Amino acid sequence: MNVSPPFDYCPTRPEHIETILNGLDRYNPETTSTFQDYVQSQCEEKTYDCYANLALLKLYQFNPHLSRDETITNILVKSLTVFPSPDFSLSLHLLPPSSLSPASALPTAGDAPLSLAVSHLSTLSALLNAANYAQFWSTLDSDDLYADLIADVNGFEELIRVRIAVQVSQAIREVDKGVLQSWFNLQGREFGKFVEEVCGWAIEGDVVKIPLNKENEARGTVVRENVKFDQFSRMIKRAYEQPA
Image (cartoon, rainbow, N blue to C red):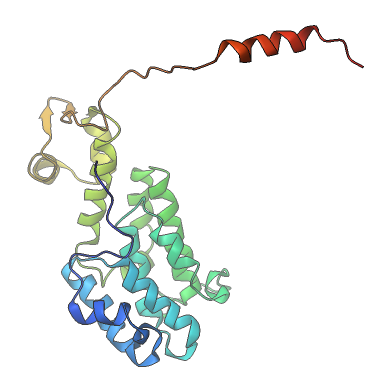
């Protein structure tokens, strides 16, 4: 039987971060800068540690004066790269109410307030979780603010494509090539390379074939009901009983 790893498990977590998370120092404001550096490291090295990131957001709750909008934005963007996990929603619930209110103005990308960043990233999250992948890419390209928000996260688009591929492989065994191009936002040689080398799928004309796996395999389900005779007899008896 396969057992899912614990929620707080991260194979790439440094030892000093593990020590902080497992002790009382996780509530020490002096560890804020250490967690912030760790978030930056995740962005640069394409790693991800939800448990540590949530610990930092909790520190921000207790110490609002230490909060950094850029770090919060990076945490939210990183959580998008592991959809459809609930990490994005978990992060939102640790943010101050003011960051969840619509911004009254539309400043330039570099001057965007946290509330506007949260609003934009929430839109992306909703599109990904609804499997509106083509609209996700068009939305991402529709506003310069999106480019600014994801700038610190190395390989963001690649990570998203990998997650989309995982979801697609769990649902279907073949898909129209044009549809998949819109889902990956890739064309030509780049599309072929990603599909064949990264995903391990086969392109056959206008159709992309996805190997059989335990998730996309069509299996019949047999439903058996165990109803004992005495239960059935009581039901018939009650049907003939006269109301008082």
